Image (tube, rainbow, N blue to C red; front, side, top):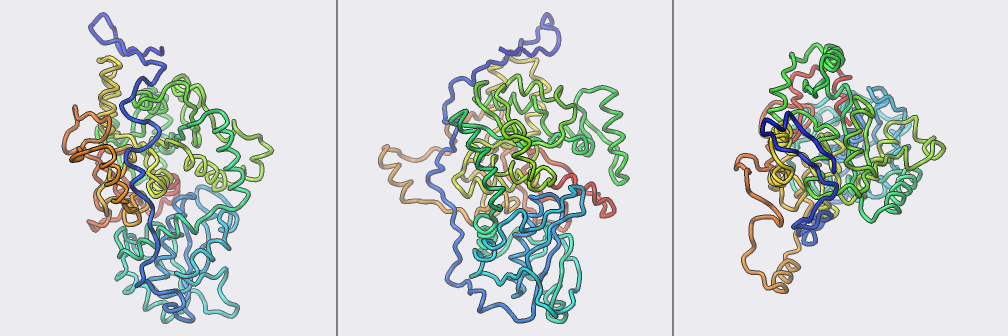
Length: 512
């Protein structure tokens, strides 16, 4: 057993002893309850006209994406929909090669461009380049959360006059709520058309196979604990004056950030869980020390010292660097987006996916895992868990584990966990998820079930306050636009208000 003791036990504090085993669980820790009754459904309706019928001649849309791989992915998805709204042909998007991530990759280096064009041929005309002697490109930017009417009002008159328009910094420039066929088009782009190139797919497949060769099941953890991320959060992790000085120096690079208030940040659930806290959460949820865990991360603040408690809890600790040789990774290593794509594949194929911070990669993967079968996807209920971690020395392990189960209700990736239409669409693509009601009815008859309980299998309602449900506020409900869409109430999140467009590096750091 690993033993953690906060304070002096002679003063009555409980011995906090972490078991090596995950213990017996009331539910299957490797699958989501009722997932077999739901499936992805993104086919166009009969009313959705073919591309040939709606595309206007001499009308071209170009976009410039921004941020890391997954933020750029959202821009590509939304660009297809924007072109459809404008009855325009889309020129294959240009990827961001100048930001913080400094990746010179083009679209065709990461995604199979021919597959992309073919998969969407019924929905949109897509060109690799503008026609020779085509119109001069006019550059503009649209507001974030711009809906159909917004595009028709702001962009349509320009593209009708100029014929070719490039929309810059195209991230979150499309409203969260759109009419049903456009939402389904979003899903077709995301889940069908965007396929990684063969070299990326093959290397990713090998990494997954190597994880499977060691264990039937594995967990993938997307760990964001970089110094820049922590400095922005304004949180304090117990590293004394050294930590305050180091993170404070980084934070002062951004003039628009207010002074940090670590206690307030933790109370509000804005502090990413530490690697140790992630490990404790997983153990409390039933995952033992024998389980293999794949970690996708950048630079971890504190390095091996910070990772040591997680590795102690889960010794079978892997990354792409431990699974593959330098020679195998050589063709990807100089390109951050291609390396991120490898992590994406291994995380997507995992039996359980967990994150300590709900950034773009975590959101995209959460939506994808919902669409393809509701595989368990664990998001920390940070507001509740942060309080629990602070007080863990005052309780037994059994009490701690029971509270983790209670607090994580609604944060496990179960079907219908978030109300349809709420939250960021790429994270909760409810329009594209259908229920097989006939199969559910047959199952109820087979097992002689009566009225279904509204409580999830294995859930505990102790200490679960009514206002802490994993409800997601509507990203389109107010006029203020933030870098990333609003999160569930207690989810690890950051407040992006106040980020200046004069500080693009800060946006890029946060845009995995």
